[in-house]
Image (cartoon, rainbow, N blue to C red):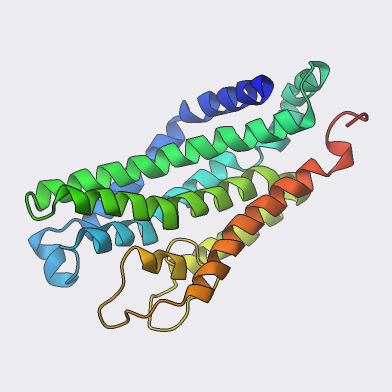
Length: 254
């Protein structure tokens, strides 16, 4: 466990110190404020921006997607990069097991993604408070933080992190970029409606309807939401399992 934690700590420090990640967060914050901040002009354009749950859900539906898309390029190929730079050979020469390496890489990058996503959440709530002071009680902010974390940030972050870190070890990285760029574009152009959302929509799928429901379309589809969650978690678990089961990935004795 200590070796896994050491790999995770190293990976997190490497990622969190990269200026590009903070640049993506800054860009996502600016676009979120321009589109979603409950100013008079924005509220005249979008009627529900004065509701904290809708506001935060709208922020993450698109601007959270932008953040995850940018982080994808920072996390993809971390395993491949270690092989090319010789870091993997150094770790294999040390008493580090495959499970510690794979688990540490996943945990370090997941903590990095969660740091960025929760930073966007905190900044967004601060922006809302500046525009709408005194309109919401503390209970509303606690509930929105809990619901966004549970139904959006945690599953979406795990899905993107596990896919980005692990799959380029199995797939050609150019094919991975093409495949997931298409997936992100499909998510970006998806529009909420009264119908069931496709299960592969990860920032505004049916799972996120538990955060906020449109008054005209209050129907929640539990089966579709569970399928949405199963896709996000299942894809991430499958990606980790494929790398962990790859015999040529580590030493011959593992």
